[in-house]
Amino acid sequence: MKKFAKLFAVLALVSGAAACASVEKMAQMAENVKIQCTPEVLEAVAGSVDVTVSVSYPKDYFNPQAILEVTPVIVYEGGEAAAEKLCYQGEKVKDNHKVVSSDGQTVTETIHFDYVEGMEKSHLELRGVAKAKNKSVNLPVVKVADGCNTTYMLVKANGVAPVKADAYQDVTTGTAEGQILYLVNSSEVRSSELKGQSMKDFKAALDKINADERAKVTGTEIIAYASPEGAEDLNNKLSGNRSSSASKAWDSVTKGSGVAAPEVKSVGEDWEGFQKLVSESNLEDKDLILRVLSMYSDPAVRENEIKNMSEVYTSLKGEVLPELRRARLIAKVEYQNLTNEELQKVLDENGDQLDEDSYLRLASLAKKPADKEDIYQRGISKLGEENAPRCVYNLAATLLNEGKTAEAEKWIKKLDKADAESLKGIVALQKGDVEAAKSAFALAKTNEEKANLGIALILNGEYEDAARVLANAKGCCYNLALAYILTNQLDAASKAIHCECAKCLYLKAIIAAREGNASAVKENLAKAFEKDASLKERAAKDIEFAGYEI
Image (cartoon, rainbow, N blue to C red; front, top):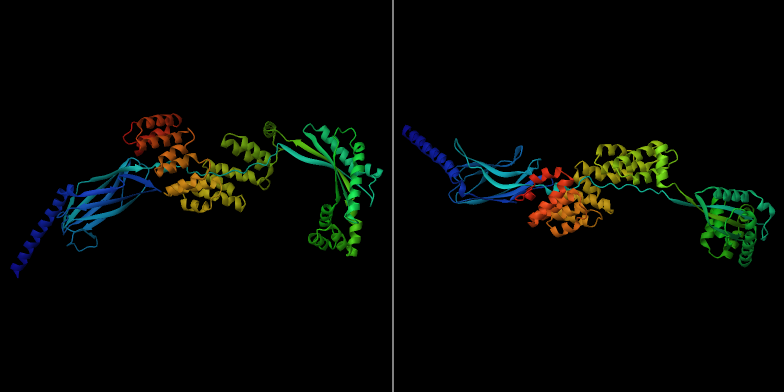
């Protein structure tokens, strides 16, 4: 029994020594292991760096009793990031790792890293440790990829919040109007009508227009009517006679006003006026009358049906029909509103005379976002939030366009639901909630919504879809060009760029680098640095320019 135990101990010692020698052999033979990494240059996509590594172990390399631990590590300026450890075992190891045959085998792994600032200048390496029994041997560290391409992070990601346009009118229109009423079946203008309040008001209005240097009469007309009772032919004739008598009265009414002779019209039976007066009246059966008007278009049938309602007709004769025996004297007027310069002067003084559209117009003229914000704030202060909802909305939108998310949210809370909803996708973009942004812009119809959806798609790594969406949004020069670069459509990217801002010049340099045009890289980067010196630091680390003189 003692001899057997001694023999067993010797065998174990020999076996252990063989195992130890084996892991050292694995370290010595490491150069025979073939490693392929896809992509060879690391790329950040949607905040992640994902690679596929295939390792081919040759025959007789992997010892059946060994365990191999492999740690993928991205080494970058300022630190390093390790992915989850990968463990493999020989065929005789009783554990739960992936088994690698001593006859040779290729294992493929997908490795994930969260992007960390600084990884744009980095490399990926594999660190291996071979273990058997109580022996552990470090394998040579193997560099498998360079990194990291972060071109997608050049996206202009704030989003575009559209502002509401003003409805400010440089010229407004109106009318001054007087009315002559006639007796039934008469076209005679009574002196009481010429001296009545309607004519007095009309004359006063003309005098006021003449005294106002911002107002002018652009046209005049007389429109005569007959009430819809009796024969249609007679009423048409009566309406014509009233237009003639009103035309004669015009001269005395407008004497000294300097207005031109009017265009004279005769309408005939005034069914339109009849319907309007009935709708506005307190007649008990007005709904019944209006129903008759909607059912019949023939004037004679209408009149007959209404007359059949004797009590109703009596009320109409007393309250409605007399108001339709008339001629209207009309002056069309244009009013010149305050010019942009005059609006600014009023704003500088106190702003008391300005309405919401005036503030919106002034803000649209301001060049600097800070000035726009100030004007909206002043409008809200003067008019009150409830009377200046568009100023509140535009202030929130302007703040979002400047990336001032927290400030914008304070004003968004004051908006009605529809307006608040229209901005929530941009808030999501600026907070990095890409999925919420995509959802908000899923039914993108406007240019702004398409532009914002395109941003969300780029941030989510959906470059093909981003290029398609942005191609259908007008004015998306920069982000569209970027989407084309990310899908390697370099000709389309070049054609998409229509400005010479620093970032567009930087994109031109990337296009040139991918095309191998060293002189264009140098030229575009020089122009970009001149306009934005901060881009020089990025370019120095940008793997897009590896091998180029920066």
